[in-house]
Image (cartoon, helix red, strand yellow):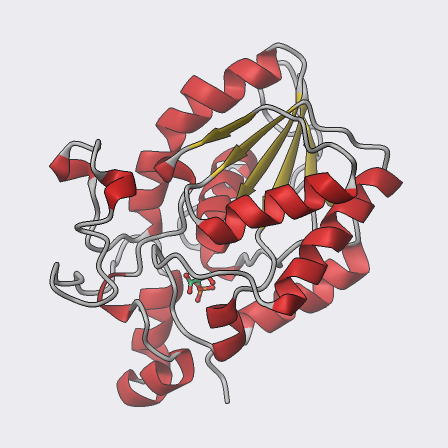
Length: 248
Ligand SMILES: O=C(O)[C@@H](CO)OP(=O)(O)O
């Protein structure tokens, strides 16, 4: 029931520099803005008009949604935002260079931190320059919910309440729902939708700025496993690039 459109934000400044980002509120690069416009064009070209938008509270996702919707002449859509759609908190890796981290700790540890399902990186101290402990946007959260690091399993746990309580009701009303979020929060959602197991999810990567469309059955399972990218060729290439991040 309903159609779900997943959109990872366009390239951010730190994506371009090869840095772990997580909850750090980094803006889009110029290329990222272009990708967001292209995302809007792809929606238009496919005649896909979302009725409502859900975003994280990070500006790279918010701006991607704004730019895509502006391109599709849909500025006026209602929007809901939640920290539950945020990128995975990358703990002590936030702000670190991916290639340097790989060289320092080795391929195996790098991949465990980056893609294992249940091993988080070490926590980020509250006095670190890239900590969100004092960020006003999370001031209303019960302190125990504010992460200092997360693995993908933690993201699934904090994302699913939002899926069931905020997104599913929109889908149940027959709406086309756009979710603008992040590589790892969308991996968590896709894992849930497609029933991907804890090992296989390590190999799944989401490209920036290319809408991924799921038509859903009445029980909110996908009609087609994996959904459909609106530009499958570009998605293939971009997925490879995400996979290879951290290689020199
Ligand atoms: O740095 C991050 O926050 C994420 C997404 O950009 O990176 P990765 O793909 O390495 O999990």
